[in-house]
Length: 295
Image (cartoon, rainbow, N blue to C red):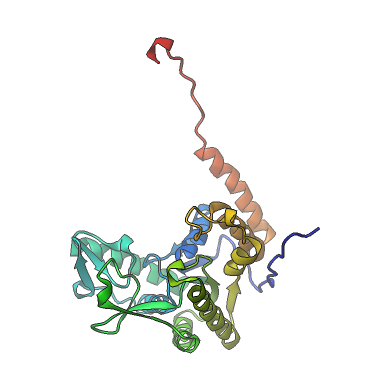
């Protein structure tokens, strides 16, 4: 008897192997897959701006990587003793401008070269909701705990996402004509938006990606969101916050990803490396005799 429905995935017309050059940007799910790829010794660049959630911020980050324009001091803000970039995750925040710019621009330079040489770009959209600075209308990637009064919040429409991303894809293809782009939607629910608004947000992302797939060659979709919501719908596959996927869910989605995009040779290499990796990480227990009087 079959007690669940499996998400059917059409086999792609390409495979990923250890010679593939891979770039990943987007939400924390992009980091989960990126970390799995790194652990298995693939050639990857993961989130050079830190975790990004909405399509507009991801597009802006890609534009900056395409141009390679370094960040300057006037693009930083100070908050609670830290200098931050509104285009970056808090992991790039530093106590001085010099330290912040060094971290930001070193990452930018490396990832900019990597993007131009990449074979595959994996992008994970998390939410269609954006925050804009009231003073300029600029969409930010992270609010960095600035007062909420500084921002306006709205949901991107399907049309606005597809329009901006058509330009982004064309820009990417100018510097890297053979680049394959694999979209995913994060299975992490943005519960603060409310259950219904979260679903509307995810729907907008899914519809926009579907339009892009039908507008360009070499654009693909991996159903991480659907796998989590349908195959792994039980709460035992969620972390303690009941929002993020648990490790078991991440491992399962990684297995599906591997079965989809790796050939048999690559899967075998991963399996053999996994045995070595676990052996290297193993710490044997050393039994030390202790005088019972020490207890």
